[in-house]
Length: 267
Image (cartoon, rainbow, N blue to C red):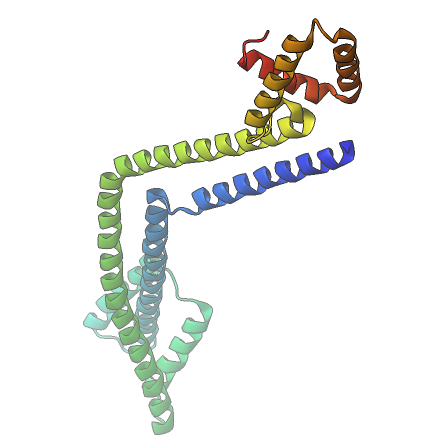
């Protein structure tokens, strides 16, 4: 019996644990204003990173063209005054921007050598390299315009989220207060039910069965009437009846009879 009661108590405890865990999951799963802000902020940052990378690629393209111009002027066997001034500017440009990556520097040298060559085939190769570099630059510029538009839209949405969060902050705090109240009430009810179950298992006689109280009152009242009417005539018989009932009643039965007598104002 004791083991069965322990098992039932463990089952009730487990049910409370599962219910509490479910409530916590539901509450944690609610999307908060801060969560919306962080999500949109991440979108803005990702687009910003792409735009920064695009700008770096355009800058690398500019380094390559400045480096190519500097190399072409350096190869002029009899530079004019204008060429000499241009060479001074390109040298300073390379110094300010830095040299291009090795891959682009080699491609630039191949392009310049081809364009300055007297061989038509080499000139054609140089023109093809220049055309490819032009297309790459145009593609980078188009991508940059697209990214700027996306960044502007994402930033506007982030601003709207900030405004919505400012309006919803008070509502959210009020809602969470109600949620916590509901959780507290649920936990209180569950604990109350479990307490009731524990009482019925540990001391079942402490909770008299409904529906039997009226019958018990009538029985107790009837026995007391018989006792009062025949106490003087047959005391020995009444004593035997009392002894017999006392020997066959357990603690719960005696407790319920005492409660019935209190209701009937017999004690």
